[in-house]
Amino acid sequence: MSEAQQQLHAPETDRDNASGLLGDELLSCIGRTSTPRTEIVSRREIRKYSIATGWKKKEYLDGDEAPPLFHLALFWDMVELDKLTPDGVSIDGLLPKFPLEKAMAGGLSIDYFRPIMAGDILVATRTLTNIYEKSGSQGPIIFYEVVMRVETAAGELVLIEKTTRLLR
Image (cartoon, rainbow, N blue to C red):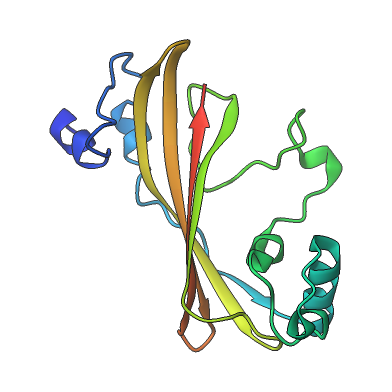
């Protein structure tokens, strides 16, 4: 990918690639998409999540409608302890091997299009949408963005989540 193409993938203010950590091979991973993952929403899972997170609305506690952020736990990978990294994180197969490895949260935005309801069959697909670099006060920082699109099995859009992570 040429430098001009790389710049198209980075926000206007994030075009500093001074350290050259982002090579063509790494940038070619932009657009990589996960295998769709299907989960069935149960009343019991909604109730458990509502109690654990302190959501008190009757429809949540009854298990009819899921509270905000329910989808996060629904689509988390269940990983055996010996498959975790030393810091307790599961390895994300969607992501390439980055030259920097100390990860930090960068941001999360979620657009909801309809509530998640008991009995829904949801399909989530994740896409690596951007990789870019900035220079920080302590050296280079790599940013990457992943968009998760959640739809019903019938194709009705439920939500779009965009996660940004930083690597030092």
